[in-house]
View 1 (cartoon, rainbow over the protein chains, first blue to last red):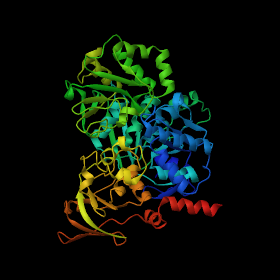
View 2 (view 1 turned 45 degrees about the vertical axis):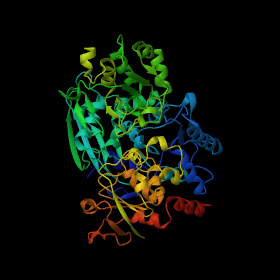
View 3 (view 1 turned 180 degrees about the vertical axis):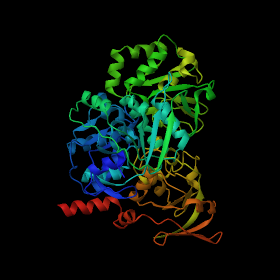
View 4 (view 1 turned 90 degrees about the horizontal axis):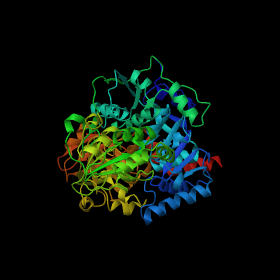
Length: 421
Length: 166
């Protein structure tokens, strides 16, 4: 039997022979990543391990993106710990201030990840890089510390769920809607310990940014990774970001899968995940009319330039509804600058939005858009657990940038076609 | 390894924001984190816990973020072991790395009630419910993870490897 993408990539990074799911393999890592919340714990573990240097100062990445710009004294102290460590250990890829972006939007734009890589990050959305054809997964701080020290980690070879996207994509439907549909079908534990592998004609035609949006939320189905083959589209993307040497990678035609799923895009409308789990997915029509207090457009899921363009197209010439706060956070310095040059920031400002810096901020209830009791937010982020964005008595709905922009204009959840035609 | 304690039952899909909300992630100290354990589930939840008590959870316990602060908060609250129907995978690795014992019980988890007196024998893979008199054989800890535990956790494991290489 042939190999799935997960098996194929892991095989390239281990001396063990990858036989199939369940086997534990020791793998070399291409990159080890942590952020301002998780790096301090990793550094504590590295010191307890007696580590005096990392395996490769060019392949350890530290991004201070969660509580930055530092929201209080404690978070400033945490960033200081990371900064001092980066200096002491000669970490090449340390990012804060004007260089910082939401880590999983930033790294692909810096050309730090490519097809066939194995990436571990002390952040659950590390799975985003699966959109580039990398086996990427979130681990805890101490696991990542071990990877930073040794340049390797262990994995249980996962079973794979193959998802094929077919049919004709309707207007205002995008990657976010497809991944919400998948999570809605299999549930938040549907891919527990497994990899999701996406393919089919809709994926073939999908941008790399869209693929990253889908891979990003594999973890919301419990998945270990969300994988896409690296094709000509991928290679054009990585080459444009400074990686000329990348090669394609695809699963074998006779790969073995634990489960197969088929999503037909034809006739499908935008999806919305309702409180308080990402699996509570409904067509937008079924939740249409629910009033919101806040809309957030940003995050590692949907804060890339493509997302900002979609949102701006809906918002152009329109105003945010009275009483609604629209917060737009471009996810990287590059997305921010492009949005500026393309006039998108002006569209957002004209509409009445707050445009903030790249930060994870409100997605995890950190800062820059916390919800009070009884408030309701629709966000392009990835989690709507109870209390995720603030008060335990607040609610979060998840949707695409198009639905978010339309909802901000209407003041109630709405299909973008009803706002923008 | 053997633990005796009172059961505290929580539901399915208890996420890391419930275990320790992000606003408390400005420290890595287990004691500090422990004061807010399950604060995102029920405010003041931790006040019901006595040191040595056992957490009993449903499906997919620890889903969500990779924050190692979650197992640390549980340990900091004085809970040394979690029994669940199943665990989210990042949390599962983190638990063992931090020295929090995690045992998967499948559907047998429904036989443990809030406040029941439990005895857990990790090596034997046995959970005894003294309140009801029932005994359960649980899925054993995978050999590889047990080796890690026996090495004294991941920090000690790496320390030993680096020492050997020097």
